[in-house]
Length: 87
View (tube, rainbow, N blue to C red):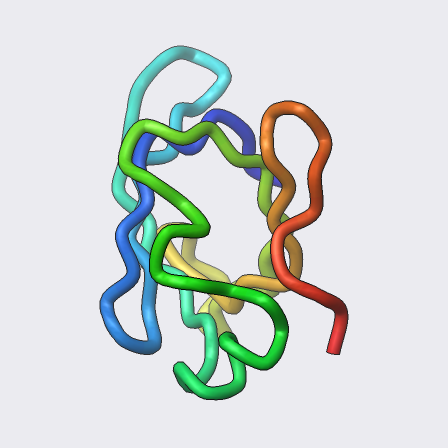
């Protein structure tokens, strides 16, 4: 799980986030999110996440095993609300 997502902006099928590590450093991650129509059907809308929102996300890692990206599996807001619906 990754915590403290500082910002999220949707780039068609991807999202870029500044991820804050436990030591306080930030690093940008790129997450695959699926086709726009699929995301819309799951409840994602253009205004679902705004710059500055803090999210807790679960991701499937990159095949290479490197950090810095993956497939978004679940996203939860700071107040515990789950974003989108389960497939």
